[in-house]
Image (cartoon, rainbow, N blue to C red):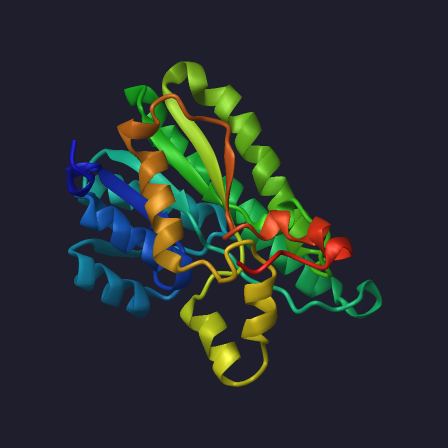
Amino acid sequence: MSTAAQLAGRIVVVTGGASGIGAACAEVAAARGARVAILDHNLEQARAVAARIGGMAFHVDVTQEQSVVDAVAAVERDMGPIAGGITSAGIVQTPKPPSELEMDVFDRIYQVNFRGTYLSLRELAKHMLPRRAGSLVALSSITARRSTPLHAYGPGKAAVTNLVGGLSAEWGRAGLRVNAIEPGYTRTPALQAQIDLGHRDVGLMNDNSTLGRMVEPSEVGTVAAFLLSDDASAVTGVSMPVDAGFCHVGSWSPYGGVRRH
């Protein structure tokens, strides 16, 4: 099967698909033949992405159970049976010390990033399990594996990674695969804007990878499309780093860092 036909005719839901990594995942899935449903709290932006890739847009607030229930049901009603899902809805965190991290911010990060992911996976699975086939991909983060000053975001993403392992075992005998992707520093429009404003050091981010660069959003989308496809038919319960080698740089620091060749 050609890459362009990897997801031919399949209905794929992308939460948080109106921007950033979610939009890139939607674009790659569409390029591989999927009919994509963009679920996002920003309906206007979701419609713009959907129009660009020939999909449909639906409003969702992943922190509200009924909103998630209704949005997934609307996809099934308006587009047909869901074959795959990518949960990308999430928010980021300022790297504050614990004494300065407000609990309402802490709680909001968990509501969106972990609880929202759980609700989205649960509702997608409710519709997919009776058909005994399909694949779900949750966006975690490389911070799930490493110590960072993101004391709500990092542990929340570690919870997503752990959740994926449990759900893969829960639903595997019904033919539903569940995997995660753990992106590293990814050059989303939001991050690029911070770089352009001088708020983030691109050189420092590049140096914190074995490849000497950041990840492009489409590279995350390409891995998501693979995990949704039959090419990954025996892959489940995996949390796959897509980090340009971020995980493997830190231990080289005492030796002078990664060598330049």
